[in-house]
Image (cartoon, rainbow, N blue to C red):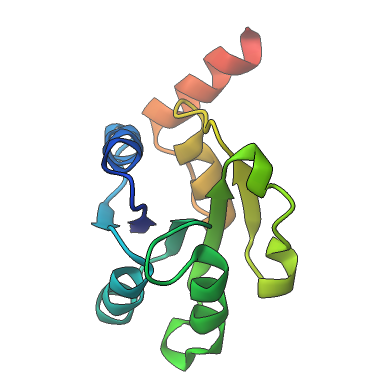
Length: 133
């Protein structure tokens, strides 16, 4: 179960479609506060959040998640534009930082790897195709 935090509608829809196409369950939120509220309700395996998320940015969100005893097993992956690449994602204990533009063909496989799950065949075959290119 992936909880996606993205304020921009188009980006949120694109990532949601890509993840769902890969067979993942996706829950969406349009602000950092909504991500936090939903995370406490549904206990996702992973939170994928934009560092520039409205109302509570991705880094601050990650700090709150790390301090929350209910969410100790939840992984956090942050992403942002190239000019946000100097974000010190390690200091907030995020698993990694993805730089936009995000490759929607690879995102599901990467997130599954972060949570230690095996990729469904549709994702695995996509990764094999890309590796061959």
